Image 1 (cartoon, rainbow, N blue to C red):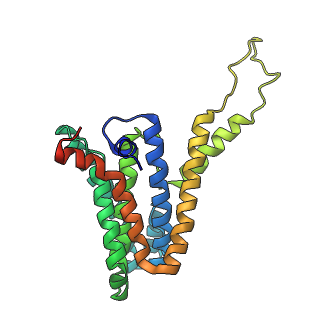
Image 2 (image 1 turned 180 degrees about the horizontal axis):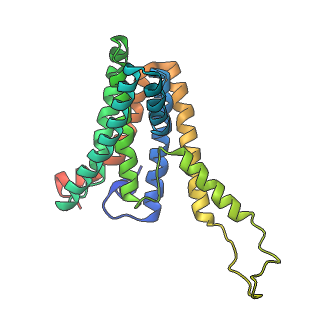
Image 3 (image 1 turned 180 degrees about the vertical axis):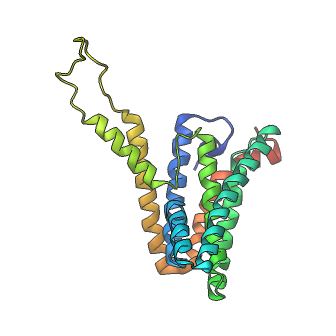
Length: 249
């Protein structure tokens, strides 16, 4: 990719286009990590709804081991999001061009650890550690996209994406004809935000595509399939960090 394209993806000067491109790229990563993680440890790690529900279930049946594992996973997601916020604000206060790239560099490093050492950790029975690692990565990633897009885009919450798509489709197909208020005045038409609908569908499609490739990649190659994913995330972040290091901006 051209350097100016990569610089725009994670640089400090944000536009709707760069936010959407970054969102699609990271939705793909989230789908791949989520699906690959399920093949690795039998658990999805990109969303907390299931983990919180499992916490309640395990508390009800008194399974202390699973309750602890779920609590660790939830805490790891929290810590990932908090770490992302710390890195972004640390960079912002110092005027760094890499303020949004720093969390992605950390994500790339952790995905590389998962790809290289995940098999060893799984072989030794450290499943909770693997799940916590992936939950931390997903919290880290979701927070960075939330920050850069001012909460317009999220990459790990498919439930929210599908809900918002449904809302926009409901507005798109709403029949506006022949309706008036009690005073005879015609109310404002219900109009779908087609640009938002397109964005939401593209994020959902990117997550699905990432999930397919992540699942097939892990099935064929095992943990090492995560290494190209880590390198892809690294490529998203490297240019702003290069700019800060060499003062090339």
